[in-house]
Image (tube, helix red, strand yellow):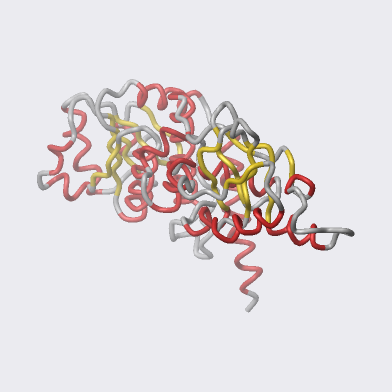
Amino acid sequence: MNYKTIAQETLNIEAQTLLDASKNIDDVFDKAVDIILGCKGKLVVSGVGKSGLIGAKMAATFASTGTPSFFLHPTEALHGDLGMVGTDDVVIAISYSGESEELSSILPHIKRFNIPLIGMTRDNNSTLGRYSDLVIKVEVQREACPLNTAPTSSTTLTLALGDALAVCLMKARNFQKSDFASFHPGGALGKKLFTKVSNLMKKNSLPVISDKASVKDAILAISEGRVGTALIVDADEKLIALMSDGDVRRALMSEGFSLDDNVLLHATKNPLSIDDEEMLASDALVLIEDHKIQLLVVTDKNKKIKGVLHIHTLIEKGIS
């Protein structure tokens, strides 16, 4: 059995389902976004079985991208959790057939309070379709399942439509990186979007030397500073050059080299630096990688040194 071929066929079927759906997006989608934007409460997502699993993921995506949302299981709703739904809320109910018994049981109670209901189903004339204020159609030519029974293409499409709603809402709300960071303070994503240069830069015991210093002085500063580089300043204490381990090695290969040479003879002049310690650490990493350097110096507006950020620190802290 050629499993590679089966896998490719599965992906092709589901990909074609998404492409077909993209051609059929209509004004209903705009109306759904407007209803959610007008919601003064929370966006409640509900469904059973595979639809419930997709709904839970949708609710999590909405909640993390600026739309207060939670998932409500219809069975739990029938046993008290329906009280979690308020009159200012909006409900998205998911059922491919539109006839899920558990979901259908709570629909009259939702409509009794005139709560806006957005249905996601293949059939406008189903129970869910009839109760819904508007229906986002979930239509597939066939499931990727070889028996054309197990929810595969249909769940993929439902999930993608949920993502499309979330992205529309993000655009409408002008949801930015800084907003995203406030919802994801922990983990790798939080580190990337929330950690600033000021949180990671080394500020004390910096290896700073005068532009009158010798190469020998620079080597001593590099050894004591533990960042692989000496920072060179002028008489006004402004950054004008760096001397790295690499600069020292290249100097040693120069004809007529002496440890008593003035450091500026072998240093890297006008080095890259930033004067914004509130820059995201992930953005600073991009600068470091683009310029193929190990150390980024942080200065004030007058080029006076405030700290340094080493690529090793960024890697150790999980910034990527």
